Every structure is written in C-alpha cells, then in structure tokens.
Length: 87
Image 1 (cartoon, one colour):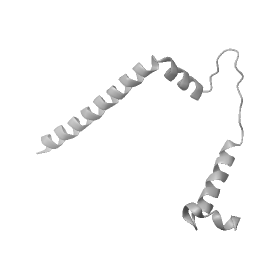
Image 2 (cartoon, rainbow, N blue to C red; image 1 turned 180 degrees about the horizontal axis):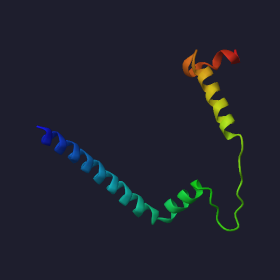
Image 3 (tube, one colour; image 1 turned 90 degrees about the vertical axis):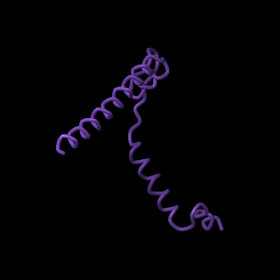
Image 4 (spheres, rainbow, N blue to C red; image 1 turned 60 degrees about the vertical axis):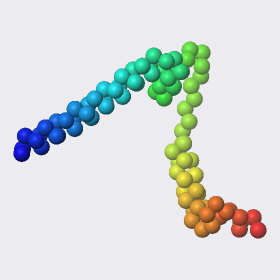
C-alpha cells in the first residue's frame, strides 16, 4: 500500500516537472522573438542606444492613493457613487 502512495506522489511530481519543462521550452522559443526580447529587456530597465531613461519616483504612493480613492468611491452608490457629488 505504501508503494502505491509513493508511486502516486512520484507520478504527480513527474507531471509537474514535465509542465515546467514545457513552460521553459515555450519561454525559450519566445525569447527568440525580437518583440518579446525587447519587452523583457524593458522590464529589466534596459534602453536602446541613444534613448533616454527616465526614473519615476513616488509611483507607489500615487497608485496607493488611487486605489484608496477607488475603494472609497465604490462603497456607497456602486458605479454611480460619484453622481451625488454633482447634484
């Protein structure tokens, strides 16, 4: 009985590893595509020669304030929660 349980666990691990391998294979193929490669480079903060890089600071605070405002506005009147402010 213990061997069946171990076999099931190992089979599940094997399936997970095969899925991971397939994902990595797809990722490697995608890296060969220029637009995918450029997007990944941009995510890492790289710029092309001659381009200027800009650092935006405080974005986290802006996003947090916008989220707080959305939560505040969505609490009362649903999608028309802003309407009473206009009347």
